[in-house]
Amino acid sequence: MTLTEKSGHLAWCALVALALARRNGDVRSPAQENLFLTRWLATALKQRRFPREVAPDIEWLLKQGRQYGVGAKLAGKLDYLWRSCTGALSAQNDLFRLTYALETAKDMHWAYRLLSDREWAGRHAAALNPDVNGIYVSRSSLDAAFDDNGWQVSPLMARLTGRVKGLETLFNRCGWQMTGDGPSGLYALTAEKHQLTEA
Image (cartoon, rainbow, N blue to C red; front, side, top):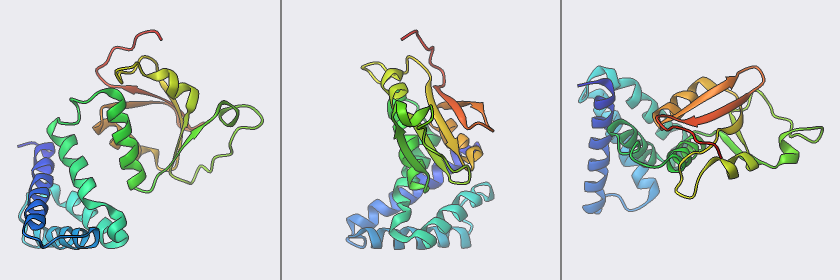
């Protein structure tokens, strides 16, 4: 079993346990959901229910649940982990996978903003803080990047700030590549395994 499969198995078990708790009436609110999953993860870690290779995943989820409470959206993070590890996510179109990556990044407290042409370049360009974890996408680039079926037809331009390396891992799991110039923060986002055609 690969590490990816082990991580997917962990997420699946947690989601099944949550579904059973909901059905039994033990979990009826977002606060109860967070408490249930935090306790479940803590018990799984303490009892070593899963291979030690996935301990970092459990520890990270546990930290999120304890630090952010309901705002951690643990069920969503587990769903993302399961989808990205099992291939369910890769079956979706490019726009869906990009949206999924952006929503997950926002859940991980990344700032996200669409920039108009005026904000994107020139003397009125938005000033971006390099220390803030941020994703800033050109609105006109986004409008031209996808066909009517959600498949990418041209690179999507974005400015990325903060801990970009961690964001790259998230994008890769969602089937997206980031290429660009780190110091300038300008990146082209392209979907993997998809031949781009001229727009």
